[in-house]
Every structure is written in structure tokens, then in C-alpha cells.
Length: 331
Image (tube, rainbow, N blue to C red; front, side, top):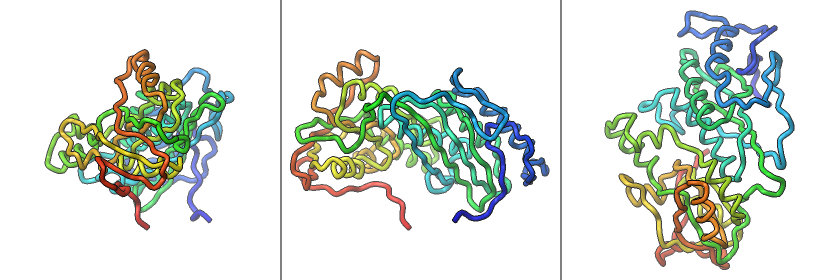
């Protein structure tokens, strides 16, 4: 059972009849209604599709989604998923949105809207946080259509994204087969290198630091891969080694890797197990078809890294056995 908390209106709704009035000390004791009004002003219209109707009630109203409905939820905790000593709360808002949207990209889907839940301690700059959310919504075309706000000892942002794709078209990680070529949508290690550089004092505008602060979900690439009828796909959030193992286990295949593309400025280890690149890992029996569709859509060509094999026990990189390495939560 969830702990008791105050009930508040969704972020994207102009509050009416809200009974609780928690205050935000950093804003001079403004009532909750005023805070929510300001949040609404920040996110309203960002990435908004014309067919979505936002109403002054408890919910937003969307027309029926087309084909299969995709739903994904991600939680970003300040200090766990983003170093609070290096990055601001607007970076957390941005990253929470784009990392959740990446899950829709990994299925080959189109985003339709997001719900944003914020648990925050007193003193949190909620306006700055939602400026990051709004920026991500605008850039990705994913409107914020609702959410929730509550007090908590630690800052966490939960984003639930709704998406759609044609019936039977969602690409799962479980469809790879022996003989499939494995590819990624870009060189790896940029986000891990950016975190290292930020800790060494690099500017927040450094290209690699931006990859850590503001990851980009590969929506266009995911839809192109779906159009190419690839076998399996997933996003690389926790490092290539670990996510390769996940795809192989889900598909019941082994993998042999002979090329790990390393981003400029990153180390081979950062490319292999650093994580948070949010590039897509793709398995396909027709790599030439995939390359042709990417080129036709003006996308950079996917990079071959190896192949799937029938023996599900095989995990080899350059002829040597590897184990899944990468970021995992501990409990």
C-alpha cells in the first residue's frame, strides 16, 4: 500500500477545487494552486499535438491511439541517475523525459504524450525542473498531458510515456535469430565520457558533457528500423555489454562481437560498459535493407558490431568470452 500523501491536481490541469495547500518555502509560501499554475505555464503547448484536448478537469483527453499502444515508465532520482553535485534540476527534468521516451523509440514507436510525477523535498526549484521537462517535450514532440506532485525527502521524477505503432509492428528484444547481424545507431561511450569530463571540471556545454546531461532518444532511427522489419531492438541505457546479454537472453541466441565503435573522446571501456548513450541496438537478417532505409530517411548509417549465433550460451568479444557488465541498481 502506498504511503498517505496529499492529493493534488495533475500538472497539466488548471486546478479547481483542490483542497490541500502545501507550500514551497523557496517561493515565500505560495499556495499549491499558484505553483501548479506556473508549472502549467511552463509546459503548456510544448510538443503539443493539435488532436490532443487539454481540459480543466482531472484528465487530458486523447483520441484513440493507432495500432498497438506502447506504455513505458521510468524513474529518475537526483543523485542516482544524475549527479546532483554537477548537474542542475532542469537537467534532471530533461533527462527523465528523454530516457523514458527512448523506450518508445526502442520499440519503433511514435510518442503521443507523457505524464510527469514529481516527488520533491522542500526548497526544490520546481519551475526550473519543469523548464527541463518542457524543453524535452518541445524537442521530441511529446506533450506533457498530466502528472502529479508530492513532497518527499529526496527528489525523483517519474515519467510515463504513451506511444503507438502499427498493429503487429512493435519491435521487441526477443526476436533475434542466429545469423542476424548486430548493429548500433551510433558510436558509444559519449555519456560516460561526459560524466568523467564533468567531474574533471569541463563546461556543461562541452559536447560530451551534453551527452550526459541531455541524452537524445532515437525516435527517427527506431521508426526507420521498424520500417526495415528488423528482428529485435532495444535502447542502450545500461551499457553495450549488459544490454547485449539482455537481448541475447530474451531471444535465446548467443552473440559474437568483433567491433565496438568508440565515440571520439571516449575510452573503449566507456563504450563497452559506460551506459546512458540511448543509441539503439538492432538485430536484423537484412543489414543492407536497414542501411538503405536509414539513408533514404537522411539518417546516419547504423554501425555493424557483430552477429547472433544459434548457441545461446555464447558471449564472445574478439574471440574471448565476456559477461554482462554495466550499470545495475542494488537493493
